[in-house]
Image 1: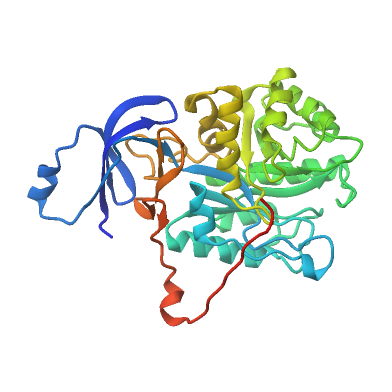
Image 2 (image 1 turned 120 degrees about the vertical axis):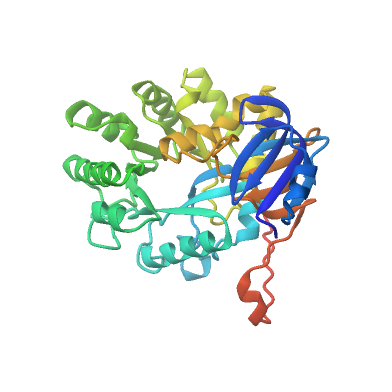
Length: 383
């Protein structure tokens, strides 16, 4: 595929609405938004591709901050292990940037394998990062500490998912949690990365109290904390709405199909939408379920794309400090999703200027397939 891509006649949501524009992408970046005369490109005598997006909305590629890229180990024995995520699964949901994590099992699903999977996705044309650690404290790392992982490994973006308020956690003390947050913060400060700590919240009786205590009793920035699964139960959701007013960004997973009641409760408790993100928590659930629920929520709440897209674009890019992600503009990565303006069905997906989905069908070919005769078919029975 050519390294020059021209998108014509797009109604652009950046996520704010920019109107009908042409988008010129060069070497994986957005070079121009506006009117582009293709005859000028012809004069350069270089190969380029054109997509006519008449009748479509053009959105930024989605950011998914929480996926089990190497699969989940399950909690009902070895037969409950889920397989690795694949590139087609991810891009079918309009996701172009993903952060991989490890859950309760940090032994058979280890961080070295997670790093390798992220590197694979990056080589194939997506953007992939990982959280260093897992449920347990002290967290398993690649180089001996969270801080050195951030400093030495490009793909490490922060610490996580550290489990608190959960019977499956290692029951860390508040000083232990504070030290992890500090290590991640310093590692991020030295590298220009996010350096945030991504917390797994369970059904435990203390809910978000450990994080409220951190803010009250330790020198911890609110922007260093990033708890997920906040929509797990009503009390946790209520406290999650409250903590957003301290500047803490929280995350809802969408794997249980409860985004609509979760958003309703969040709004009733006066949570700040500027400090909310959504993730797929994909492992047993498809990554594409994230966008499907976004579309359903838009229908129920009668929200515009401008209102709901930040939850999977600009809000996520801000907390992860990904400065070229989450928006469409000159200098941004050419991560783009074209959807039907009526149904919002995904028509085309572009990641770093490379076309992965065209006319609703995958055009991605994994390089290893050239030397393989394998055929893998997995069809989940759950709707």
